[in-house]
Image 1 (cartoon, rainbow, N blue to C red):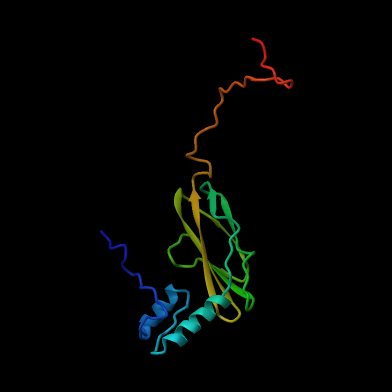
Image 2: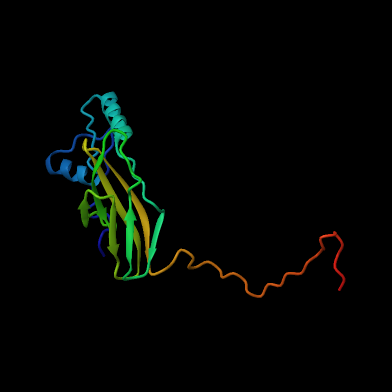
Length: 172
């Protein structure tokens, strides 16, 4: 059986020791490039990290979950997203949540068709003109609707008035 953690790179923090060479590139790739190296000045590293967090794009998707049947196209919309410090110039779309981006472009809207029943996560990574990045992700449900699994409304309900507009009970 495959190890589910194989190939994962640990997340960096402002306190992480400096990775070297290829490890630094791999770490930057899985953390959307937001690797802050603590080279001995923790206060400076934390200040840099906070400044990047405050200035990075604000990712907003138009719904918390997406539902479709296999073969139907879904439109993912991140047009409400913005960057407080710049303009968003690139959107990378990962439709199956595997970390590989299947579509890249300058438009905040992407369309994708899923061919089989599945439950998963999609992700969009956005980059602004200053090179700051942010991610957003949402659940994708293929093969079921948002109301599947909920009980049906009762169909055998009878309403019996308990009073009239004058306040007295009806006669039977």
